[in-house]
Length: 347
Image (cartoon, rainbow, N blue to C red; front, side, top):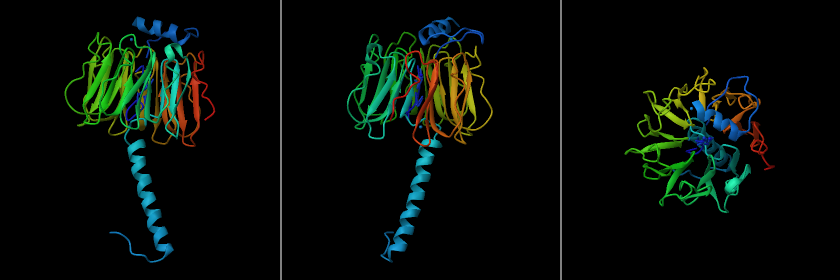
């Protein structure tokens, strides 16, 4: 509804988050009261719009094995810092409005759910990260180029040239962080959501009508629609940010969460605890806690805020669903499944 990779979002990371991303939704929708009857993702979107990452001498096999084992431990620690401690979803998984995409271990992308305008039909090739938006999907290929597919009504699937480290597909626009740290955006710019400020960024998350990014100094900058305060971030230093339609959430350097903007269903009311990553969805928000469990809050009409138990490496909140990658490599989804967006294929 993400960078490094996940931003969801409709702003998904995604990703991961829509955010690293509904990598959402970009990795967003406003929300009806708890007694609201079940609604499809498109209907919920309409409802919500009403309100809101010394050489060694040979001393025998035993000495060599010890050195190799020590090197692997160091490598594991580095990878844990990059992916788990960065606070950014790793970009392999992204839940959009009503479709979901995943970068497999061989670099190819698979998508499931709604396929209107071909948003769930990824091109061939090897990808580093993926971001599913409202009606389109974008990914960073292994060479650094960005490719997009799906609806191009506003030019959101016509990326700028250059080499990128991450990309985030939003509602009607897309943004990415180039390898020089600058941000480039394309697509709908009615609210100036595709006009990024100067400076260098670590990550960016495209939401519905606004965009937010973590600058290299750790501060968050947002631009675009601010009707509900979704583009007015708090002060402080952050590790990751995920923009939705009417709310935005971020992981602070102390691992606590901060959310701002609309909270009609409690989607911006942050829970206590320490988090490794966060993903803002339509009317709900999900995050991976530092112990590996997933917590979700906000709208729960279709079970989108009721995650399964287990240990997760990443989670991405979509329109009215969410998906997560467990530490054993399996993908699980929950929430609305009207278009099959919560039914991942066998990997």
